[in-house]
Image (cartoon, rainbow, N blue to C red; front, side, top):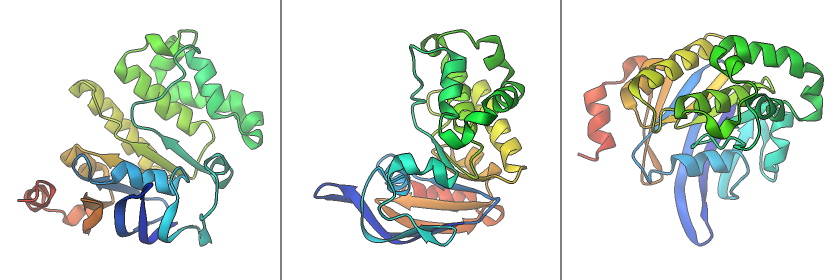
Length: 233
């Protein structure tokens, strides 16, 4: 579904990604793990058109993404749940969700998808009139994930969903990811919690210093070996 070939990208004169190649199969959950500074978020920004690609190619369903503006990704059925939630704090929970279904092609389905979101995240229904800025960290993460699903994307990209959350809430987030995986949706998960990420994934990529240093089916991953590479031991 999504293929990156020898991709280089960065910030101005500073290159971060060095010839990154990876493939995301349709209907799978692919996790990208690595320590801080490995280039994981930079990789997602390159996919979403937030950063220019200086070398290599990114294709989605065989079509190049070069030059595609970020706001055009919704039209390709791609949505991203960003690191840090990034909810609209002064808007209600329901208004945040409606924003997720704002692209013209999806507006007719907003009412139905609101109900689907509330069925998946019952706490959001209880807080539908509450300002997003007053939610707990876990509730805000659920809102960010639900908002990302409002356009019913075929490819959902989730960046560091467990960051800063209590263990019980992390369990809930990964249970939701497992349910989403059981559908026909394709998911890219960027995560530092290696054990949880590998457990829910179909395929694992490990990044170090802007490069892919391991690519392996999740079922074949040896966590001890993975952690050795992760910490560059």
